[in-house]
Amino acid sequence: MGEEFDRGGEHVVYRSSHDPDVFFKITHPGQAGLTVVTHQNRHGEYNSAIGSAAPLEYLERMILANEVFQDAIRFEGVIEGDLPSLVISQPKLEGALPEQKEITLHLRDRLGFDRVDTLIWYRPVDGLVIGDTKRSNFIETPDGQIVPIDLTACFATPEMAESWGYPPPPACDLRDELASLRRPARTA
Figure (cartoon, rainbow, N blue to C red):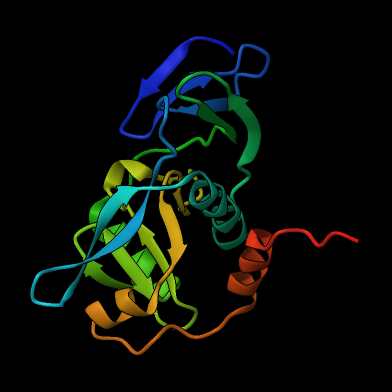
């Protein structure tokens, strides 16, 4: 696996011992990373926050990152035990931390997201939600591209959209494709 490189709220990160341009990320035991969640308060209003993801939500998030941000995340497997961990790999990106203003312009003007909370953005055109958009989760490449490296991604529920003052999210092909992964296989 290689030596430990970093430790965060979701993963322990290791540099590959075979390829210095690849990192392995292992979720903390018994956890499956983070996602955007919605809670209803005692007044019947919905509030969104960053919360714990289920394993399937975590894997869907990786698919979304690859599709939406042209990432190259690979699911590598599961470390079994009393509290299993999920393992992904991700290529190393050269660059530096961008300024928050550059991140905001990129998400809003180039990708069409609206900020709906401090670390949560929503794209009304397809209902995509990204979270954990702190500065340390982006890299500015030497050619000036802003690249997200560790965002949460999911599709908004009607309650999420309503809590942000938007109509229910529209149907989209990628949402339908992910939903088909959740359906059990038919047996003959």
